[in-house]
Image (cartoon, rainbow, N blue to C red):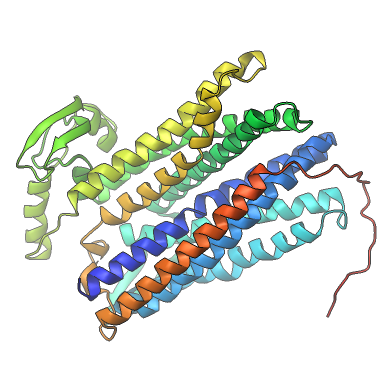
Length: 464
């Protein structure tokens, strides 16, 4: 492999690994805030214990997400310096806001939340976790605004071979940014809700007679509602994003179906056995008109095919292959939808079985709920893969190709060495993170402690 291939593999591996923690960080902050809010309003100690229990898991996820996210910004300068030089004037604003405002907001108030139990008043302590939740949302918004600009550049002029920002508001409020934020945040709630359900299901399966069982019963029900509602919101926001994507990047939607020839109406294949290169299709299951609906919102509309779009782009941008890797785009799109939908289905079935107030007696639901922890997290990763791979060969759509963005002075050997080091390091972090999360998920709820309205004044154990 050459430098370009290695740089792409490195960025893909490190980013997918980082993105495992991004949706959980966003969703968990709001769920933990919800449990603590319920405690402040009801003074039921069960909710305080749940906030502490799931808060421990949130801290591990946040730490892993923060550590792996820092690497991304270094890679922009090390492996993709030509890209960074081209987009630096545009990316500087959202990334600065994300780092200086959103991330520092999260980190500062998360520290106060960690060490503020029984030192801050209940309402003040609650405000800390809500500020963390808001900070996570702001962080996602600024990062997604930068990524949305790569998908559909707005608010810039091109001078001296560089893109220069002219309208920061246009970058933050473009329709591409808005639908990306909606889709990503609702997917984050889907992922976090599924984890809450899975952990509670494990506790109820193996500690059914424990005094903590009623609390985990309540947590499971809350997580199911979050997952089901988020699943509906993900489907709605995903459909809106698909319509916008078809208008801005029609090749991506055509590649998602491996549609080589323009059709009206266009069917959607649930599964296809064949080469996916347009030469041979052995067998497939298709839903008539569904691709037209996903792409435009109507069941009888026209959807352009890959071959027609390729011919148009050759005329518009010059000679070249403007098709993404079709098998990756095709299957990542289906795995994103299928795994996310399955996670919501597990919780919907659980709510149906809980309508009489009891968990299912057999082990099938508990196993499905625990296995369902991974479903939306992996679905989010496949969604990111589809979004980025489907844009190829562009790193900034219509302005810069991926091959033009690599660092000219960094050799393949250097990239390979860093790729190996990062992969091994991330593997070790993954083992540590799994052990810590498994330990926290299998532990009992924290002990109940009496709390007064006014926090007890205690001298700080350490101060500058």
